[in-house]
Amino acid sequence: MEENKNIREIIAKNLANLRKNKKMTQSELAEKFGYSDKAVSKWENGDTLPDVETLYKLCQFYNISLDFLINEESFENKIQYVNKMNRTVILNNALIETLYCSFVWILATIIYTYLFYISNINFWYIFIWALPATSLVMILFRKVWKSKIYNFVVQTIFFWTLVTASYIQFLEYNVWPLFILMIPIQIAITLNFAINDKLKIIK
Image 1 (cartoon, rainbow, N blue to C red):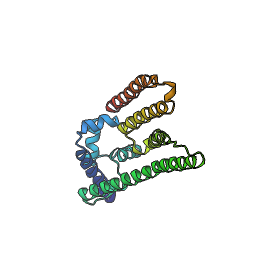
Image 2 (cartoon, rainbow, N blue to C red; image 1 turned 45 degrees about the vertical axis):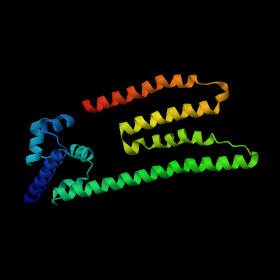
Image 3 (cartoon, helix red, strand yellow; image 1 turned 90 degrees about the horizontal axis):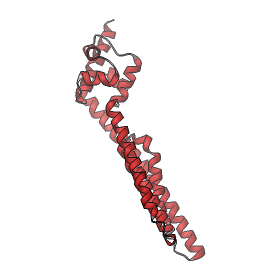
Image 4 (cartoon, helix red, strand yellow; image 1 turned 180 degrees about the horizontal axis):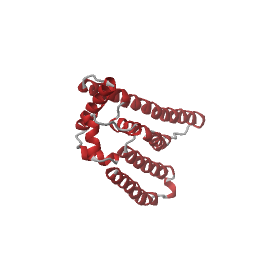
């Protein structure tokens, strides 16, 4: 029983420190997870523990593992370790995304060189098409970054570069109205971002 009590106290202390580190009040945290502030207070005093599902959601919210909650090591040391791991993950994801984007430009260079070799024509606009292709690759990483702003920016870049590439490719056909088409598309992207951001605040 004493061991269980110690674990409960450790978890309680860590939960309190995590909330304070997030600069949230007990009421704000309670509202976010659908509990009363009294329930959060009991968690942080060690009177009760959240159920397993709530503990899992708390770990996701604070971006930590369950080991973090039950470890008695200094909170500052654990936070430094988690921050270091998060920076490592961010760097790795950025490098992977850059690698995939570089494949687009390598492929564009190969196609350009091949077409120039067999026809002696400068198909330079291939590199223009590499821009929307690159932003499409970036869109595929939206679930990795889980950022609304990231998603908004890469969607905007994708559609604008796609329209620009189409305009340059078919310049002789005077397809400038494509840019007018971008106005409602940009409005839709912006509204989608604003609505999702508003829903996130409400949640």
